[in-house]
Image (cartoon, rainbow, N blue to C red; front, side, top):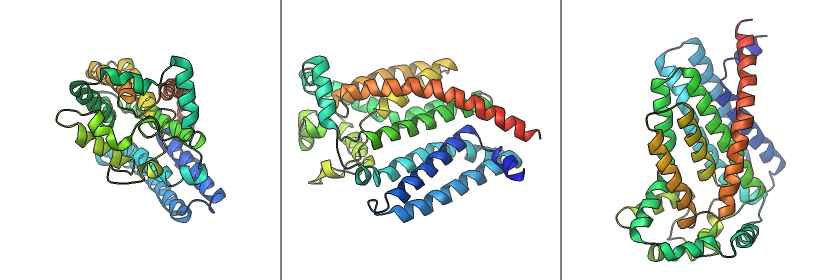
Length: 311
């Protein structure tokens, strides 16, 4: 009974993080002969699960602003942590890239390769705008989360944070199932990107930042081999749509800023050669799945949690 009461302290975002970390532990046990750092990943994940339990317990029992704040905002860090962790796992576990499939689907739908076709409209001003919007993906969640946390009851924040984190984990499953490296490597010369798509002031710096996040740089001769397999579904499309949906659902003050950034970001993923169009379509489908299934999971957990807390 004490364990059930302890588990009831967990918020929905805690549960989905723990479940996904356990899933990664299971994968590392199964594919220990392929994943070089399998033992370290298992140990670290167990430690992170313990940390999640601790943060949830402190937030629910101490109820201080400090503990509650740590508990609510750690979710933004854990998705980055897991993103880099699966970098060590995806390619060793599934060493086949499916770019050929996405290229064929795009060409079948449009009769051209969209990232090549859109080059006729390229301009340094457009490149700067789209690269800035693509880069804004990293702050969209903070824009959304901070306003939601400050202006709304904590229950609303928990609902939004859960759908975002849950959505990230769903997209990560896609990386395991259909790994790919994207058109900047397959349909274009990655090393000529700065020359073929020049920006104005900050484009190259933002481009380098994005590359570093995927463990590559233009200085590497084998960037295509080392880049993170994170193309399908487009997490940029899926999660920016989740944030867009929630920002209008809660009528946030910055919802129109989020709307403009999301539209530019979606176009920019193709213009900047990060994604095939089918990746965006896949991201939209997973966005719908995220909202539909996530709300059901959240409602079930909250019902269970309240039942256990009053016992």
